[in-house]
Length: 297
Ligand code: GUN
Image (cartoon, rainbow, N blue to C red):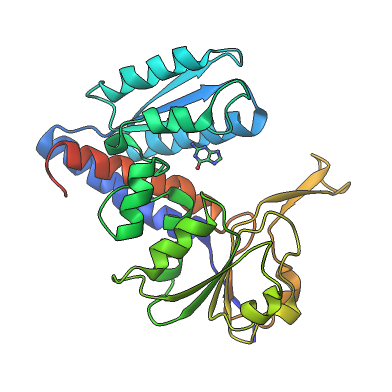
């Protein structure tokens, strides 16, 4: 059986097309321009390229975007002041402080300072709590993107056994919580495996849908999955590759080539979950603009 390749670029492009039309309508009918403010402290190369990609995607969708780039020695106090200023700026509906922050800054303090109603990353404890109890808030972008990628490609998680490998606050825990809610596009039976799990393969073999965010290559191999599984690989790892210009290539957390013949569907890396993450950031920014203008709950 040849697995369906779950094409995140295609799904993301479809969603961005819909959002571009929605933003145009919000402008034309309501004179409302959704606004996103991205804060970057320092010049970590991966962070610079993420931030650039986020702004480009916002611009293409018609969302107003602004970047606040500050030097690596920017103080925590000044960063908190900047966040406060953005919290009160009416043209800004979404605030994203790019992580990781330099060591001298307390990340939690900064994330907690963002107005939960502008927290388009979905990292503020208020939004984490709302997710737990099923109230509308902002869902974190990568796990929300995983849900949309599944549903839009015909793999509704309802009634399925979803096994998540990894318990991080940005992927494992929230994706498990999103998919177990008693709601449409969710309603799954969810198991979470992690480094403390004694026999991960015992659980992964039971998965109808397997979501892997373990943080290292080959965390899941072909012997660990059943025939017909749907695999979502959230991992992004650099492995040395002398044949590539940059000297490395990107791989996910699962053995893609080994698992593909057994799977019903599988995401590639790159081109799977990655393009969905930024798409959901745009989605949250539009949603926030509508909420601030009482056009949504
Ligand atoms: N760094 C890597 N991914 C993310 C993300 O989704 N949001 C933020 N704020 N920082 C990140």
